[in-house]
Length: 253
Length: 378
Image (cartoon, rainbow over all chains, first blue to last red; front, side):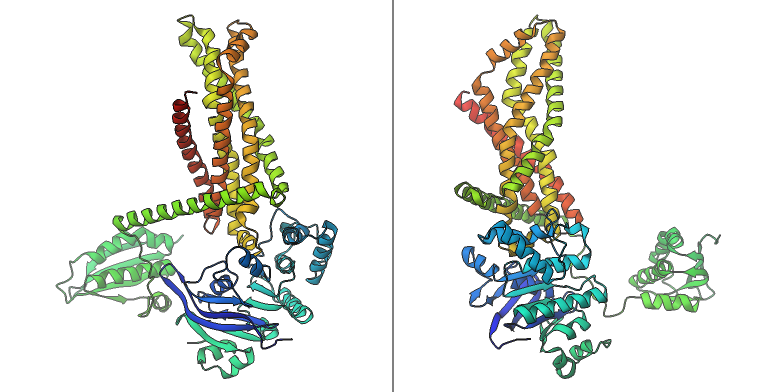
């Protein structure tokens, strides 16, 4: 993996709330260009909330999120469009458009944001589907393929505009271990061959050890970051006994 | 068959109140004695005897989670009265079950309060209403902006969606529009013919029908049918997309949901609604003509009377009105869908609310039009 030291995402003093309920408070971290960065935490610790802030769906209560040198947390209009075209998102359910075939799902952003002729768009769609191992499924509707295939198709769609950063929300949730491992392979392959930066929300330990360069672990109790580092570092050297235990899959009393 | 459950109350030799439970304490058994057992727990009869009470469970044959909950509820109630409850004669399995179900010291209680008072409820409802209103105003603003943008740059409109919706909301609605229009004309004429015949004025039924269909009933009934058919469909369709994160996906792709989903739908509806209104008017006239023919008047009399009495102003005024009503119906349907919460229930709520608010807004708009038309002397 080709992680450099250059930060591609900088999260500064991010605070999130739902109404009166504080989710996390003053979170700071950076994601480096080209790395596979995993967001981890118990249920309710705010993993998905953090992700939704990073992709600009939620406005933070306080703090900033820089994608490159632009602030997605306050951008409006064209500046926001510009940032959004640098990122791709795979949602937990896939969120493919149900009335469109896989090809149409992928050509949609191409139609909207490029002047490519239709045959070029179709060609690109087929290539992206091939990249995630779905060559030949262009004319299928999302309802006609399996859950794992939907997630891969959703990654293909997220990559339609060749974004620099891909955000994946629980890619392995609801998948069997073999399909999940295949998906991990896809992620690693894309990371190596295209140099895409990945930000992934997951709590599948085997998957984290396979793919993650660095992990951030959220602490739902204390509303902050519990630990940040490579999976091996956290397993062996985290200050928090609870974090070490989590990585060794021990029950914590 | 297991013995039915029974409970009896007594006092032991030391004067402590005793509750004896017998039988099979599953959900059905616990439910059968739940209220009586808690009434015993609440009664203050045993307070003289040092505040201790006894629950004798030696007759319990079987106890599952529901039965254990009953035991715990009784103990809780007794302790709330300031007394203590001793379990006696419970089997080991039941004791273990009770212990594992008993809430521990550190059990976090939900910080969300259950059952707010009515003052709080009123406040919350008001805040919700205000938030809803604000969301609608914001929607109208964004929508108007996007509609303007669509007029300036037609290439940015999703015409494929436009044609699909125009087809389903337009051509698909023809049968029901025909049926309702025809019945409306038939019933209206028939009911007015009866009293008017007494004055020999049945010929004026044609005037009446023509005028009321063109000016009022045609646009109104078309709009109501459209709310029920298409407004609700938009709310359900967009609401489901919201639940499936598809709206989020559009947003993060940089495709504004209002431009992408709402504009083609609303444009399609405001295109088809005047046509549907015309069709409704025509179907109403056919219904009226049928009544007229049954009174042995020639058809030409009917046609001339309608044409003479209901002028172009009435027809065009009605069509203009239908245009605005269509805009309201389609926009409300889409807005409700976009405002849907999460979960399948939210889709149902969005659909219901799209129809209800649609009809309320139609009524409001009708009122406004009545005032305008009156003031203009049309």
